[in-house]
Image (cartoon, rainbow, N blue to C red):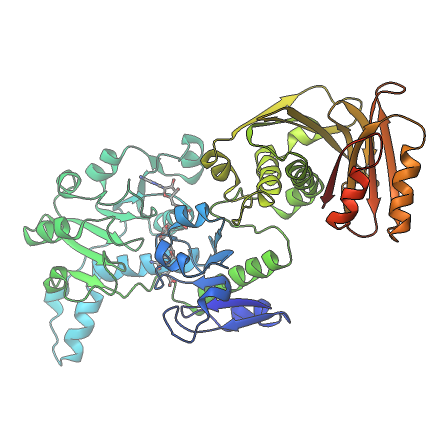
Length: 524
Ligand SMILES: NC(=O)C1=CN([C@@H]2O[C@H](COP(=O)(O)OP(=O)(O)OC[C@H]3O[C@@H](n4cnc5c(N)ncnc54)[C@H](O)[C@@H]3O)[C@@H](O)[C@H]2O)C=CC1
Ligand SMILES: O=C(O)CCC(=O)C(=O)O
């Protein structure tokens, strides 16, 4: 049974993919509710209210995936999650339109004093001269951060007859031209805009992006909006610039602390606020809940998650192409970890043939996760495999080679151990499957799956028969068997695939046979 905790208010209708799962218990309670079995929870679904920090993760040893029903993951310690091998996914585009529309609604409300006028009329006043506004038409809108939401705002601004100046270090000149907007520096936006709106994530670089120094470069009478994250506009600096009349007004949907409690900005009539409502529409909430519920379900079905923050993004098509190699890489890693009993200094992976066109780093991570999973008592997966290698002093190398050894693709791995080196090569053959075609200088050909016995022996008549007899005497059926040797009478290997694993006693019996050098039981 998978235990899934939904700890913030997430659309029930959107959770349908999870509620349909027969092997899952969905708990809809706050994370600090004493009835929540934190130690059993494998998936945690949140919005922005739940703070998922290291302390909470410590209490959730079974946690495998954190899903943010929204965009910003600043309430999740992604670094700590990565270290623990916990996948973090979000719903990157489910609330884009709602957030853009809310920003636009805030902009129009700010410029036309709608909240203040509304309150005044309800107070039985009729002060038409007190609420004279400013048109959007012909004004310059400065957008800081032209991602999904920023782009939607730019489109709407153009429809309103505004000119748009943008600062986004990742925006290409070509895209700006296509959109009919002006891409410039931060100073360009600060100095030219009549209205400035921020749409970046909250990061150490964007925290306090609009501060006393940057605000002093803006036009006198500028209007400011923050519907992204509290803290991108420094609240103290904003209060100062509102108080001295430099900033004509501000619209805020988000705050440095949420809920903000008593906030000095609230005393200004020209500051209008909403309680983090950007994504609060029926449509957005259904979209983001459905997106993350599907992601979590896919995770439990062993399918790729599409919107992970700490794994490479992959479309379904790409995943279908990479899937067989992902499996092969994992199996190679797992095989190696069961053969190499000593300390390991270096793992180097070489890709050749058709596999080089795929996301090979992801494959290397899969290989490492297969390797470390059997060696250390911790959750290792593609998320934290590189970090795990680094922490254990294992150097990881990745190369591309043109030598395919006669196959259409190859994954070759070389491990430098404390005592000796190990090498293994695998390939994936269309309509046939994954094959291991080389181990430690021996050409061989077997399917890396099930209960395998990797036996090194001397190439002499009778060895195979003796091994077969012991297995037969103990009712262990041999499904497949491959042998490889370099020269007659020299060192040789055999790979047996058995219908069930052998216990230690039987492995010992085989080990004691004449001409057997070593035996590794490999369970894949
Ligand atoms: N108020 C609300 O309810 C909502 C707020 N948000 C907030 O809006 C933010 C933006 O969302 P999206 O547009 O979907 O994200 P996005 O990732 O599509 O866009 C962010 C953009 O910011 C740019 N950027 C990053 N650092 C920058 C910097 N230092 N200076 C200038 N630009 C920078 C990036 O290049 C990117 O184009 C989210 O991170 C989230 O915090 C999102 C949804 C709803
Ligand atoms: O969950 C919410 O309503 C907040 C949405 C948000 O801020 C985001 O998606 O980044």
